[in-house]
Image: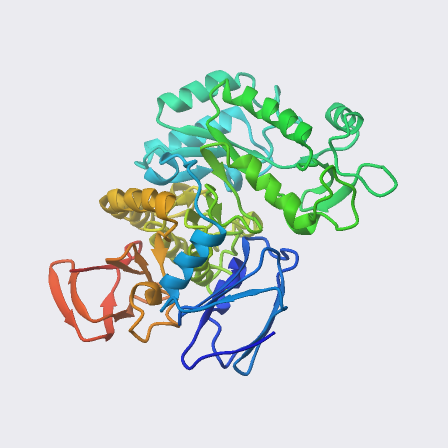
Length: 502
């Protein structure tokens, strides 16, 4: 099917990882294959137009943009007449992925999230977890959700605290709770071969198999593992029993990692005869039952009550690092994933931090990342800012947390609104101002319908140009009457430019 693009029409959708390359205009030439999620982030078989049209399919499809023509398979739904981007999104969302009643815990948004990964990597242990939490508080940062990452167990599939690393996990969790922290644990759908759990799951037929009946072994970033068959109800019962035992000792919820479609294969035997994307989706559906959850990669999970993090970003300026945070987060919202987290502050790629022990950390980059995250739905630290930053730059981090505090009631209201209506929390400028020439602006955003946020994302800059739509805007103690256009603002490190529309 061939669809002709309209004048000044721009399209958004598909892969969240492609947000840095969107919107797609008449001058674009690109092909996207959504038949299997090939990225480490969210994917939706949905494209939305600034002119009030959308494309949808119940399954992934190949879409091609070339010289103002869009080519899609005949089975793709083409719908029009919704005036603008907001109208197209709301109609598609309500029809194809309406939001569920189940709600995420507001504690994921109220205070910063702390993840132990970059500080401890695979060497998670009780003593260092307590030290990390105490250092957070002793340095004037507020308590929040504390995620204990990969390495708290002896091996994958054995979802019990390692006795050698965590001699008294129940008491540790109680102490953390008394300090104001809610504990989440990292889990994945993988099982280390040649273990008691592997043999149990193999004998109960709860693992994905190859066509010759043997357990399927996948290669993922930590090696080679068997994989839980989430299409088998008995597998879900087994895993829920293991995780609920952890909840009984005080664990609040889980970071559900892995489950990438690329770690499965079409040529496999599963209980439900499901595809890689469907297997990945079942991992997300399982995790949705917990009010404290986090996911990084999901296909067709728009509308679900999941905290969706952007994939690990490089500790770098540009589209592999900090410049991807705003555009990719905006695309999360417009494809049905409003509860988003723009990666770990400073970049989530832990190898970068191992390489910068020589003092080459870009402190300005770290602070600007915090500036972006502070008015996003969720704000997450991993590398301890009080360890990697000097006193001045760490104070900028504290300032960004204080700014979040000033707007936290707005953020909480918008989270609740998203749970109820499906509307994004952070929004493209064109979503709120369809009659302004702002289709290509993806480095500033609206927090709700009245708060404009413009962080600085270029190295060495002390300010930036901001597009102000027509109307009356409040900036600090000033009132600005805009006729629509750009205005330059200075910016202190860690403090995004914030304007409020009257």
